[in-house]
Length: 371
Image 1 (tube, rainbow, N blue to C red):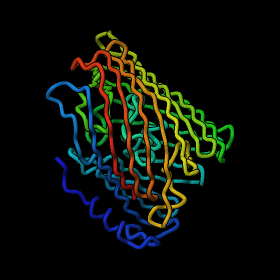
Image 2 (tube, one colour):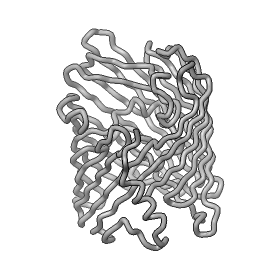
Image 3 (cartoon, helix red, strand yellow):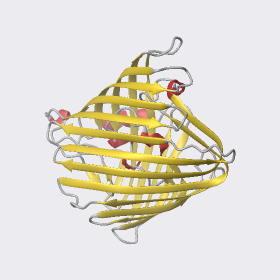
Image 4 (cartoon, helix red, strand yellow):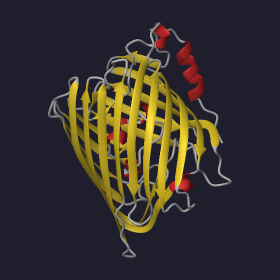
């Protein structure tokens, strides 16, 4: 069920406001409070699904409200998801003693994955790739970040998340090192390595493959769920380049699951993504991650927006629990800085699915508003 959301009327308010004004930001410069609603409405049409499962579905994938505040070197970020199991997804305070160093305390992403840290706003494809399903996600912790001219270093200590309980999922340490040998100009090279270890008593680890914006039942391609876990070790390798309007990126994620029963597993996830912005815009990059594409000539200012073609291959091997291999083609139309239409077509081959499904194909359409 979709919950009533403050995000929707806030979106309408900001769309109707004059282009030069932002009715949801109070103050400016280093002292401000801003509200940023974020909505994703999806339509999915699937084939090759078992009898009894839906073949088409339309729903709000995300209805979320972000809030950001800053007062000099102090800052804070908060986000609340109104969808289904309403929850706080981000809540942290920050302090920047210098322009290149920042400390964050609270619920936030563990520093591990390029796609995960780039966020939903910058997500090229409608559905998440298979490798990011193995990333640790967001939890309560303390993080230190140093963002240099040709490198970004981050490390942190974490408990659990706000929903399951800060002390319910053991203790984790995570770190990520990014190197930009070419600097951060139009021609960019990104190389990174990240590692994370979570240990505790009777941890749970579930790794679930997706087939499109969470609109189809996850059990169609659920390929791994591990209990009685004492330790989770993760390693992530990243590579990306940008040459003008063309960019590509890849990640390989390794996980070692140490179980009390002695039956250890080693899931693996990988993806390769390529993007070409036909209208010539350049994908933003800062702080070791990519940002949201902003068209040079927005539709509502008399232009034709930014058009982007993308292709991706991704897959997961859960070491005896199942395998997936998927290919996806995407077309994005960025009408303005805030509004985007996306169209994806994908095919997934599945081995070892609990439902006995061997493949699924789908077409996915998304309307996204990101204030």
